[in-house]
Length: 189
Ligand code: SF4
Ligand code: SF4
Image 1 (cartoon, protein in one colour):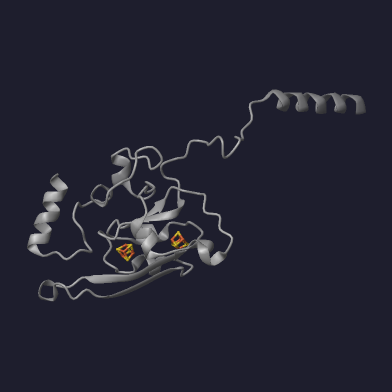
Image 2 (tube, rainbow, N blue to C red; image 1 turned 135 degrees about the vertical axis):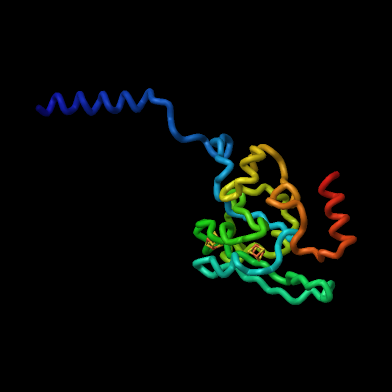
């Protein structure tokens, strides 16, 4: 019956009219974000990075560019690489997180941000300088040590390289005895 169909349609309309909206008025309002959110900007700790390039090799899109050279600082004890470039092309990233999964040293984390609009695609490439100097708000995605601390990147403030990893020592910096001692002292402080 046509009349009944119209009434049913109006009932559906009225129900939705009084229902609480699912949407919010962004940017004035924001919904709570899960700590495991895989955000755009990535978090990278140079202190923990060895320059092994596992992250770049595992990226299915090949959008991480790493350039290193032998550090030349502790050749007698086993040298470490110095990192010249570490760029990620966000414009092509699909936020799969495989690069983070592949990092054996807890140096790379997904970020927690999502506001990265730019006018030019080339401005979406984040460089080593930006990664190194950024305030660190790592996502807890694939990082159980952060979840164990109940870390929330949007509420808990910046996370230091010592707190972010499973081990509290730097991998990238030369492991000379005096340096390692200093790092351990720093960790205790
Ligand atoms: S999140 Fe995925 S696509 Fe993006 S850089 Fe990492 S591995 Fe590559
Ligand atoms: S971020 Fe991790 S996987 Fe990538 S080069 Fe550094 S240590 Fe290796």
